[in-house]
Length: 158
Image (cartoon, rainbow, N blue to C red):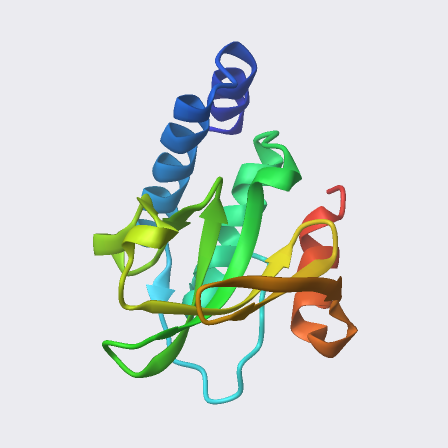
């Protein structure tokens, strides 16, 4: 599978190809992992067999990075699902949401009305902090240790 995905990126590194790859990986992870609510939130970048929303997002990011996708295209976003009134995390690729709640899979973030972003963990180690309608600042992620850990784990060379 990794060879096929990597070949697809090398042959057609367009935005459409990246979206297709992200959608394929998202579907694969959504099918292979089981949702498990965590009382104590732990960000696990190892692609466990079961986990909560950020574990799904981190697994998708890991697979995309392993396939050769440019890290600058990938981020993990922590948000509030206002419809469910709960915290949630998703993978972002080029501004599109890849979600373990599949109705939103592949939609542009701006089109997902029930999601209110809190912060974004970028693969370069920065964290973008959101206030209402947009990201107001990027800063070192020392205030967000789970971001720092997750990014460090994802960017390790296997």
